[in-house]
Image 1 (cartoon, rainbow over the protein chains, first blue to last red):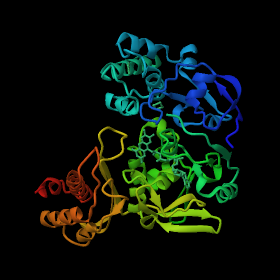
Image 2: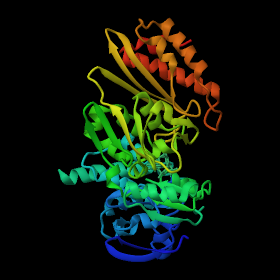
Image 3: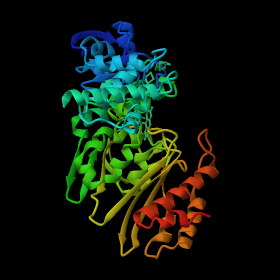
Image 4: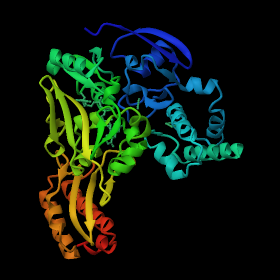
Length: 161
Length: 293
Ligand SMILES: Cc1cc2nc3c(=O)[nH]c(=O)nc-3n(C[C@H](O)[C@H](O)[C@H](O)COP(=O)(O)OP(=O)(O)OC[C@H]3O[C@@H](n4cnc5c(N)ncnc54)[C@H](O)[C@@H]3O)c2cc1C
Ligand code: FES
Ligand code: FES
């Protein structure tokens, strides 16, 4: 019953092999086993969005996914997106606009905002709010976050033009 | 909190999943997207001995049109419904509704089969399949069963499924050229479960409803196909008739009291949605305000 099971996956491009209990969720695997503590754990039932990561290019809640369900997938965490420079402009915009205070929500916010910013069109504030609606921030009041995402979207559009 | 310990089996086929369910009975739970099951397990509301993960069964994922029927596999994800051209063409109600289901990261994992099997009375998709007169296709040890959506939902988190059965697909008639649809809900925040919602399908000819199916949700222990719709079919819709239908609707609802709303507030909001729906489908904006009492 519930013996450890082998799992193989890519994390930020690196192949990882592990032996995990079925009950170990992906957020805890990333934080405890791999020491990738940028993925935060808030509510553990899908409501706050602090644990958002990317699996095969799509954002998901890592607290609602078992590590074994990630078998054979490619997982990207905030560490991956920071180190490869993919969101350097978005991070700079967050800093400039004070879009973070305690920083607890920030990794999830950045993952979710980048998911929207990957699309070529410039989203309006309503669209930004809807896309971020599943991510709680208890500090900023959201305005500055929406500002930072909007500013990044504009800058990226200018660069493309 | 964390889920209690359990064993895990990755099903290799529908037949294999059914064998696993038959072997473990009530102690097993099917795992699809996990977006309702994992929260319940993390909160220790549920602690199954074994999870049967059907998430990898490609045979259950996909959208197809066969003749006059639209067939949606159980593992079709919310995001697939949102993006599918077939859904936009043949069941636009599902696309409109699924935009209100949770948030992008959850829609990337959650499935239609999981949503219907979970049967949360505040959930959007169960009300849609009731309004669309869909059939739920279920497979068990004795073979396939086909259940009308109106018969499938039995109570809060309760359906006609037994523990050794799998929901495999949902079938619904493709939207005819004359069909029109309405979807709206009241929620605290975009993506939250509804306080009250309405999913409707209608056929309008010469300014009258020749058909009208009203699927209300979050107004009772299961989605409700409102019989008040009958009053509006094949009749000239006046403000007085709409007021009569609104009263009849309030009488047939049995809303729950919770942190979000009282039964009286839910009855009121259901009436508002009914008037908006009728006004929108008949393209008579005056009916929305006109029937306010
Ligand atoms: C923060 C948050 C907000 C949400 N908001 C909404 C919302 O506004 N509206 C809404 O409708 N939903 C909402 N959801 C739930 C979401 O839509 C789920 O995706 C859905 O309810 C369940 O689908 P799933 O594939 O994740 O199922 P799972 O969680 O895997 O399973 C749910 C239940 O159904 C059973 N089951 C699953 N698949 C099958 C099958 N094929 N055959 C038999 N039994 C099966 C499971 O055993 C389990 O009991 C929300 C979830 C979260 C975490
Ligand atoms: S910790 Fe995963 S959503 Fe809150
Ligand atoms: S910055 Fe503190 S929760 Fe968002």
